[in-house]
Image 1 (cartoon, rainbow, N blue to C red):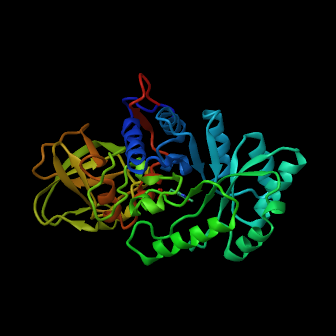
Image 2 (spheres, rainbow, N blue to C red):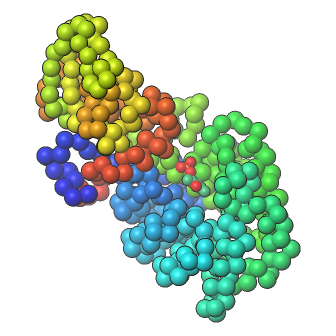
Length: 369
Ligand SMILES: *Cc1c(COP(=O)(O)O)cnc(C)c1O
């Protein structure tokens, strides 16, 4: 993040920490008394875990989920006290680092459980653990046959382990799918087969399916970063990621002139173009070629021609634009869900593609990094 916030930067990602905290509090209000953890995998969905996690901890969040062991190790350096859960599991080669950094693995299989229990017994101690059961996602977590084995031999297999959470993950939490009720029912059956422990099923979208999906802990990720957790309703989350690029050059072209690689856009009238310093190397999806839009100088300008590596071209005809003006590709005017739809992807991918952008943080006293 060297140089972030300096004036010479042609493009930047502004991250509103205050909005992340406000979005977190919205979940707390909605799901209380249930606890709210924060998912900060993929560098907090591209927003920068080193700044995001302390802001959330300051708002009272004490449980964080990461995907990779390395993410957990890095987060431990930032949050010495927090409960950090590593979703990837406890494969035998991960155990030493999990122990050293006091990370809690989500145990995804009988072999994860065996490795973690062996580590507890070898150290003559009790280790916290999360059990992840699969209820239909078929990605990570104990399968039904493994759960049955565990249930029959839980005292032996869980020896040395303190189960702090039993969790599962919804496949269709963002839709009104019959799979949600089915997974809910399978999850309740799984809980009945295991020793009593706090439970968690819902992520960002699942928390909006109703109280019965909340259990003891909800674990939102993408909504904390501004995505709409209710596809069919107004977005209750505040925008977090503001992506802007400077106009490098303005030019007028004539009817019939083309723009960009492969000349995929041809002007139907005399057209003013603004070339902006953002491209696919910055995380702008190339699929926004000839479909996306930007907010600039109080107007809205369509992206014309192909998105290239470092540049995009906007049709700014009729808008009063000058070199040095900033175009907003994502933010208050061009919403995350709009960009995702135009690019043919989801909000998650739009956010995480931005992880290498120079970032400026708003809402952290006196600091920009
Ligand atoms: C990524 C993830 C989450 C967070 O999901 P969002 O849809 O971003 O809220 C929660 N739980 C698990 C297991 C995940 O992998």
